[in-house]
Image (cartoon, rainbow, N blue to C red; front, side, top):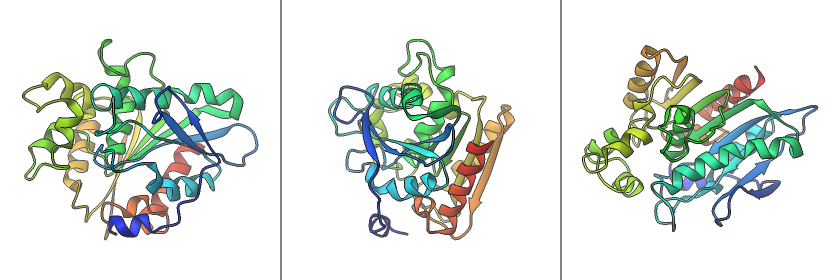
Length: 271
């Protein structure tokens, strides 16, 4: 599936948008489930190489499909490379604040904060894993203060080692990661450590790492390497490699990969 084909999918509008900060890009789209009692929550984080050229609209079809399974979806927008205030630390602070805002939404929307699953695709998959690592950050790192701990994480084609992406040939996402972190791994090594979930294992949270065997943007070998490393560190990790699948099918709910993602999120949120 190409980007053009992904963007051509129906993208249902959210029920509402809610701000979690003062910046115009600090908001989330709410897809509210019709559920009796407290609803489980999927925090959804879109990808797009951390760049301002890509926003949350292309992941609305997945959000609606998860919502239709009785799970309220909180789909985050955040400052991305090219937006004022993005990069280090702004983008990371946005992700942390957006996830933490579930605490504020819970009483007014009837959300079950004990059943929150963070789901991210591509760059959003990186941020989903990073969200699970926040409790291991140094006190002065962005996002380290009183982090909300989700029940589980689902990373869809999400890289965990940013230095490895920069050092690949050619660099994955071009110069987006040095722009995100303000330099190369050699120039700002501390930032790469704090930004890379693979450097902060174990996360202490159940994780599902799902990718397509034909992903040419984030190679499945990276998912396998991270899953092995996280498991060896003591984390509970399920690695799912979907056959005949590329980078974008995993967020298209009409594909076999997309249906598998919805099934996994439902199962995790229902436990």
